Length: 313
Ligand code: NAI
Image (tube, rainbow, N blue to C red; front, side, top):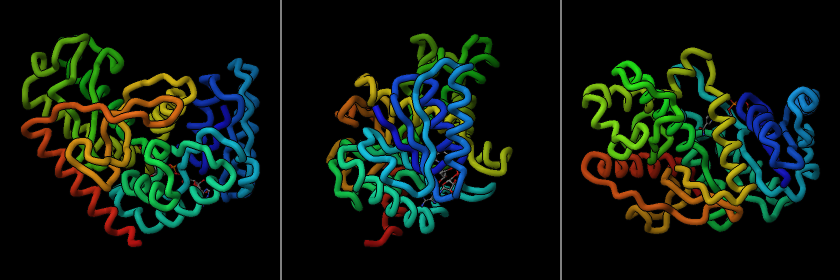
């Protein structure tokens, strides 16, 4: 498998590094517009291969899309990250131009690639990538739900530990759907469990409301601490999507995809659980939404549509 990562900044370099560490790809190409940065980061990663025992070749290039030719997966991280106090949606104008141009260039050299979109506002950038390339919907997938679900599991595990129920984030099962948006993402409390036990039986309503709120602003919390947006969990989450495609794992992961009637919605990209395998997204998995969670998902859809409206034609 050959993987291209566009954008060699914090997130892109982490994606490339984690893909190499996971050992499922033969080649990773890191491409950026900043002269020397991709080359330097790729060389640094290659110099880990002895210590970390991987054989993946990581190559860095500046603006040279020919080097990305015949990639199976293209991960798009190019664009500005938010600064403390900013919303992801404020990045729409500048990042739309970047994302449109990079997906079009990458597609010329890798006509069969599956695209994973990370640049923010991710739901709108996924929609833009789909519309501007005209690719079938199974080959354009946005990464946000995997990250938000990891944050949800982390905050649930903290609350469970505080309530006397020992839990690591990986002991907890939990999923976030809807937009990758501070206000409208939907952590699904109703189906979250600790070793099979519903968290609603272990934590009070107030504690669960606090976990939901912390999850929603999880990205902003890190942006406040770091001065820019996070990269370890975003990079690891994206690499997990690439791995599911490479291994044809048929894993169910919440991702941003174009809906054609699923969840009662169409003509937009938003986060829902999907089956991910070698063809990209193979199907949408239906989770029965009720009450507040259903209403919140509908709000999320409206918010995503409002950002798409800013993309113009
Ligand atoms: P960064 O600033 O560290 O890296 C971005 C890189 O993109 C820079 O190296 C820049 O030179 C490059 N770039 C800009 N225009 C380009 C072009 N036309 N072609 C190739 N490369 C280009 O930013 P970071 O932290 O890596 O974030 C990248 C994007 O990912 C941001 O939009 C951020 O908001 C988003 N993000 C999304 C997440 C998600 O869950 N979907 C999570 C974290 C970040």
